[in-house]
Image (cartoon, rainbow, N blue to C red; front, side, top):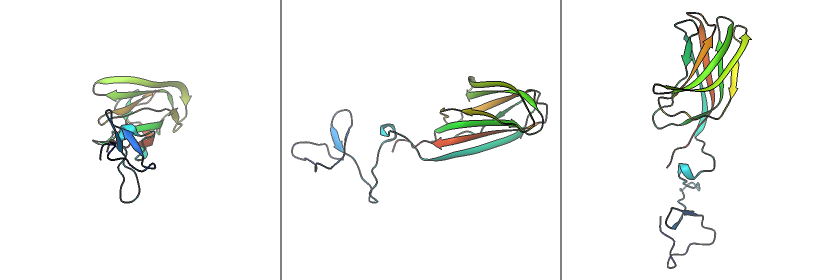
Amino acid sequence: MPEILPAHVPSPRTPLVWDGTAYRAVRGHTDGTVQVRGEDQLFSYNRALLTARQVAVSGADGYVDSDTPAAGDIWCPTTVHARDLSNATTGVEMQIRRGAANFEIHAELKAAAIDEWYSLQCHIYLHPNDVVRCYFLGSLVGDICKVTLTGYIMTLET
């Protein structure tokens, strides 16, 4: 990508980008699309995020961890749904779990019928090995509980 100098002036229609020290012409692909670094994008979208994980909880007030992004992916869930498919529950607590640390993002106390959804509209980011952990208050040992994430997977820097 050539630096823009008086000896190398591009066409007036050439898109330019500031790289911190100089303006440079934006790279193009042979299919006519433009190559843009991930952090320079106004909105970063790679593909849809649709994932669900269902397990039997191992204790009273048990929890389910969502799936985790693969190496090189950043997930942006915009909805988190949690439900107990076996018994009525009294609430849910949702956390982002990063390593050994928990970061609470939502708590809801309500008497929910069997298979009734707890839902959170959000805009959070998950890195590889991060999970959304949902505690099901009032669940029993062996209850089948489910966590669903929808949203999008970000485009990383290219």
